[in-house]
Image (cartoon, rainbow, N blue to C red):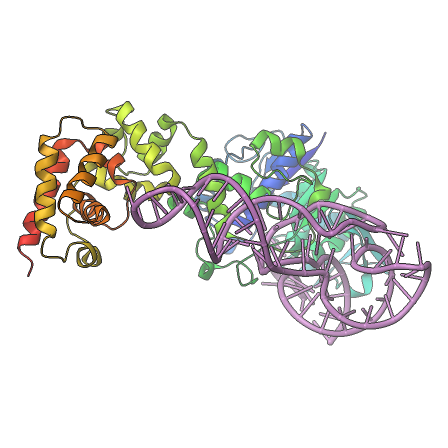
Length: 439
RNA sequence: GCCGCUAUCGUCUAGGGGUCAGGACGCCAGAUUCUCAGUCUGGACACCGGGGUUCGAAUCCCCGUAGCGGUACCA
C-alpha cells in the first residue's frame, strides 16, 4: 500500500511552500490509489497549541486537499499529534540506548553514528551520498525527555507505514541521519523525494516582505482555490507536455516524482493571475455570483434578483476581472451612481464650455428615444455629436464619467442598456448639475 | 569554513549527443475600438564560464563560479 504524509508544524497557517508539498504528496497518493496522512509535528512544546492547527487544516481544505488519516478524521495509527506519542519516542530512544546504538550525554540521548557512508536514492535527485564523518552524534531525546525531530519523524513514519517521504529540499541533509535511524531500528527506509523550495521574485526564501505567503491570504485577495491548485502543482513540476490548464483529475493522472525539477522555483504572481482568470472564465454565472457573493461584494442580493440581467453584466466584466475582488470594484456602477468624478477625467473631457450643453442635449435625446438598445443609443449619440459639431468621443467619455465617475469602464453603450433609461438620465442630470458648480 | 543540492528565455518549464532549442506567463508592436480589459496577428528574449570525451555537446565527464539549503537538546 502506498502511504504518504504531510507533517507540518502547527504554525497557525499554511504557507505556499507547505501547501505545495502537501499537494505533491496528495497527488502522488491519489495517483497510486494510496493513503494520504496528515500528521502534526508539535514536539516543539514552546509554541504548539491545538488551535494553531486549524489554520493549516483550513488551508488544506480550501485548496481541496483532503486527508485519509489525521486530525479530525482519526485512523488506525492515531494519535496523529506527535505531542501525544511521547512515550513511543522515549521507548525507542531507550531501545537504542540498550542496544548500544545511542549514549547518554548531559542528560540527553545521542545517537552513535557508525563509521562509513550513508546513501539513499532520491526520486528527484538520484543517488546521494554522505560521509558519516560529517554527521555528528545528534541528539535523539532531549534532556527534558522530548524527542528531537529526527527521532519522532522516523518513529512515526515507521509506525504509520509511510512508503514515500516527499518533503522540502531543506531536509536533504537531515536524511542520512534518518536513514541511520531506520537502520538502527532494523527497518527499511521509505523512498525519499526532496522537492525544491519556492522563492520570492528576488530568489530569496519566501517571507512576509514578498507579500502574501499564507494560502488563506490568497483567498482574501480573490483567488480561486482551483487556480491556486493548478498553479502550485506546476511550480517545480512539469507534466512533460505543453498543457498547463489542467483539472485536479488530470493532474492526478499525470503526476510523477521524476518530473519534479531539481532547482528552486520562483513564485510568479502574474502567472497565478493568468491561471485565476482562466478559471474565473470557466465558472457559470451562477457559480460566479455565488463566489462573488461569498466575498461580501454586491452579492446575491444584487445579482441574484435578476439572473438574465446579471448574466449580461457579468459578460461585460468577465474579460476585465482577473481576481474575484475586482468584481467588487467593477460592479459598483451597476448598483450605485458615482459619488465623485475623476478630476482628470473632468479636466480632459468636460472642461470645454459647451460640454454641459452637449450632455444636456444628450439627456434630452435619451429621454425621448424610443429604442433602448445598444445600437440605437450609439446612433443617437453619434448623430447628436455630428449635429452639434462635437466629437463623438468627447460625448462618450463625458457620459462614461457621468455613469461611473471614472475614465475607465466596460463599453459605454453596453453599460447604458443595462443601466436602463431612468438611471442613465438621472446620472446625466447629476453630472450636469455638478458641472454647473464648477468655474 | 565544512557538507549537500541546483544551474535552458525576466519567470515556470520541455528537450538529455546531430532540434530552426519547443510551450506557457510576462513584455513589445500591429489590428479591433468610446476608455480599459479581452481577443487576433506578429516580434524580441535562454542552454553560467572553462576545459575535456566525441566526427559532432545545451545534452556525458572534470574544474570553476553563482544561487539555495544544512551545519541546534528547531522542525
